[in-house]
Length: 534
Image (cartoon, rainbow, N blue to C red; front, side, top):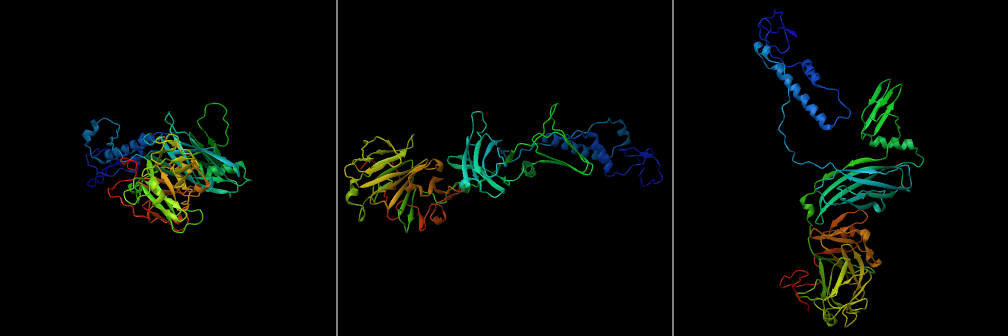
């Protein structure tokens, strides 16, 4: 309540009630902005005691109600109302006006990794991390790839797969490492989760967390204090005779301290009875941040189905050409300069070098096919001269599964024309080496297109284990660094000497036979199934 503020009647002593526009002497009152007292009064009338366990959407609703009440109170104070009308108006409670709902353009999935099982007390021993994927959208692929990079992990990187169960959740992944001979301190672990569609990365999530490797003589209390200092989300301190009070606490890691005659009260909303308080479990959640993948990242800079790695100065045991093929079915046949019928063009090598005539003519234009099978990979003889597998002719049009170390001899009538050996059986292809006079000249990668490699399941002889890990994806060839997990697209401008597994003086050629000028007059593509056996 205030006195009359009409400037034309400065001596008026009538009181004006809050909200009135005229005094008892019918003197109009000036419209003024609401005072802080008016706003606080309107706010206290609708504000209730806040709860420590209130949900986020409830707090947002209360905030919207409070803002609406303040706006209505301000309008009620500032808007002029006639005295006669104000006396007849009933008291109403301000109702917030619902704002039109606008759908956001993008709703990110609140996915996170729940990490548990870490025991920092086992300093210098073997550790196991349990990682559970939670909150992932059901629209992603049923199998996700998890890649971890850290100095604690053997060879610096490891790769696992998250598989969705029939219940809809994700099977947890266990990652092992050892802190033996590691300096005490904090170590980062970088996490990448990939969702693949048709062999390409369609979605990618990343996060980074820190693992503590304590001193060997650290006490359990020190270890937990260090852990809580980095992972707590609630901290309460009471100093100088003050009182700290905590209610709720679901999903909270608490750090409560009371000093100098302070009183700390913790209520975790437990049922009646005795409560055992102890150290919390070493477990926490890391939010996965989805990374936008540009459209250009899905395209290979130099797409090709067949290529070659040329070594200008091969050392002992190295081949001059490593020929790369990415085909569902790869045809082996006779070398021809004009309109060859095969994909892998084979010639006879004598002690004097390559001979494209002579015994090479005893190879069929379409001699044998290597393709994917249910057991792995198989070879089928489609020639007129036959194929010997470990010295035995399997018969024409009778597929035989490839085995590591198998000897493939073309042909069966004359021995020694071309002799190959299966030196590696990969999940995404086969590696063949020549074991005749052309052993120093060439070897072959027969890869499946758009297939991701799994180095852990590779079966290879020492001759092939020293070769780089290559695969085909997005229309082109890639190199995989098994230590770091880095993938590099192969192109003529790629510096191969900086990649693992490559010797010096190597270059990438976009043709499988760059040393020859292969002429295809009819424009036939590789592995043309319409051609007939020569």
